[in-house]
Length: 126
Image 1 (cartoon, one colour):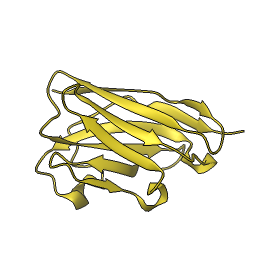
Image 2 (image 1 turned 30 degrees about the vertical axis):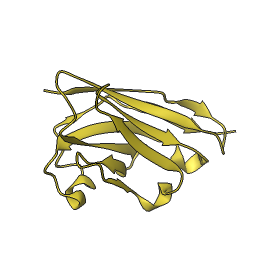
Image 3 (image 1 turned 135 degrees about the vertical axis):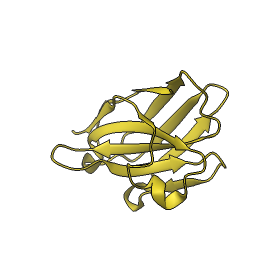
Image 4 (image 1 turned 90 degrees about the vertical axis):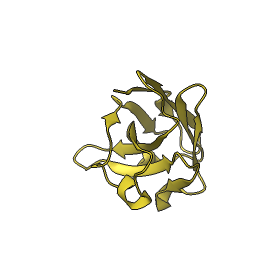
């Protein structure tokens, strides 16, 4: 089974940037759909962005124009480039993999995913 490891989180000032990485091991992600979710204390995991195996992408409205998801299948890694960060982006960010056949609307929930990473903390604060 694919195992996922996130990295790249940290403390950044409002307006700053971070790039999160999600490295996969134990299997290839080239035929998988990969997503980023985030969670703040007391809330459910929230869908952030998805990169489908077909190459299409999807974003939640609050991050459109600021976050970019990309994948490097040769490196078995997915990235989340975040710019113009806001305090409300503060959360633990998780990556997850789903079968490549998963339809887009099912990627927005958490039930279709086969594996999750352990998360990386992003804190946006002055």
